[in-house]
Image (cartoon, rainbow, N blue to C red; front, top):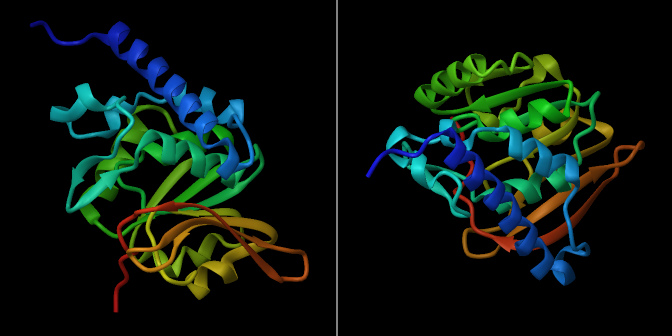
Length: 225
């Protein structure tokens, strides 16, 4: 059998986005909406997801499931990535902090929807590979740091939006401090067996309000002691 070409992969990408739409429609009651922001879906159509997974898994890149990327990490299910981006609601002028770069797929989506993305990845090999992929594809408004994501990236704070692709029982204090007033943070919260994808909004006075959206299962946020 001959390998898939770019035309085949583009068809699979469109199919992936259509499946996301079906998934959202089925969860309308839980999500409070029947469709995601079209900006998010358009950005996902533009990002070649097969270039953000290990090469042997490229043919699986557009299936709606997580895939291993090494070091006991995964690239999130496309639906979950789309939902988190929709909840984050990035705007063109936003400065965004991402915790958990992986191989850079979510950062590539955010790069199209915001002014700049600062991303922190604890695994050096993933961070280096992600930056190389993003640079090669022309995403010049993403910078990656190797380090403990729970500490954020204070040099570039405060951030309009923060997204965390790993779970914790509480929002790390440093990340709340680095979120602007009127900003939003999206992450899975709760113990391993009872996580909820959650939005955390900080009002102009610094008061924090949480909203649990749906049950999820993410790996735990790694920290450096």
